[in-house]
Image (cartoon, rainbow, N blue to C red; front, side, top):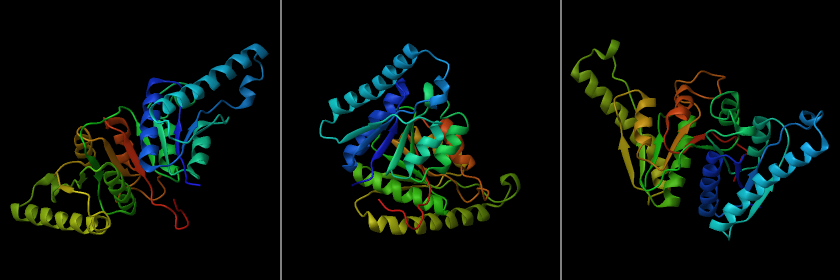
Length: 286
């Protein structure tokens, strides 16, 4: 059975946007969609009344039922399953990621996903999920372009592979952004040194793009080498993109940290859905 696209829902507006994006992704990839609504641990209700427990149960089931109806109305052909596991959102979602093609969540919401973007939940889920994680704040469409950050790291190569797949699926161009800072203290250097650095960075980008370009010859690639901070460059490019793809860490990341500073900041800044990708372990497939 094909690994599903898993989406976390909580009934909030941004959760619905994540659901819409996930359903379209599942339809494009011809994969099943799994809707997950995380319930608080059972002991949370130990002192509540039986009536309150029943109301909470009905409300939570209603969240999943409504999500399923939304998907079936727009994608009647899609295979849809749902689950209401209890526990902490990061632990549940990380467990789901072990058997998912990708995991989709809303940027903010209520209930189990309320702090997903802003605190430890985001760091754990986005930084440690086995599969790619797509964080949806605003739905972006009509730009007909995927943007990917490239720096030559293993995480960047994983992001490139995912971005090329997305561009091929959608039949849109891919903009590969490799931001760089000029050499020298505070950028004070000679013109020849700057030109030499620019040439070197362009050759590096071309080398990094060579293999995925051969694998996806139908994808038009636009090379972008802005001389500025990577976070700012990618945030600016994402303003005109349907999806921004980055590795969870880049070449500047510290060993042992699950999420790099660029990807962490883009969780806050990207106006379009953001896919954060980690290299797959050798035994992973799907």
